Image 1: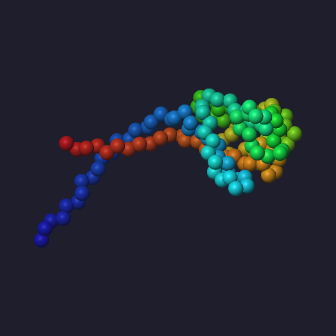
Image 2 (image 1 turned 90 degrees about the horizontal axis):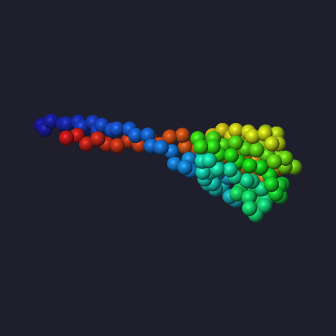
Length: 138
């Protein structure tokens, strides 16, 4: 009878890679037939939200003002939302935020620009990359 040998255990080395510039994003979670549209938010950027043609984010809903609000993304990927005194408001986690007061948006949190029926966006982010590399035994 032949002896049975267990396979050699594989050793790995772990690496943590730096985060890419687009490590935060917004996803459309509910709006008509659009589902899970992915909008990358570069770190260190400011986004304008509204119906104007030069707005960075233009939610397709009648309750969105021309100059509705702003999104601020800092160098660490934190996102703050500020309403510009819009008539129908800006909602973070289903709560209307005060105009001209930045509100921090947490990972997985939702934001809606405008009244009921307007698109709902969810903040997604990557906190770290984890890579394992097989170490070859000599």
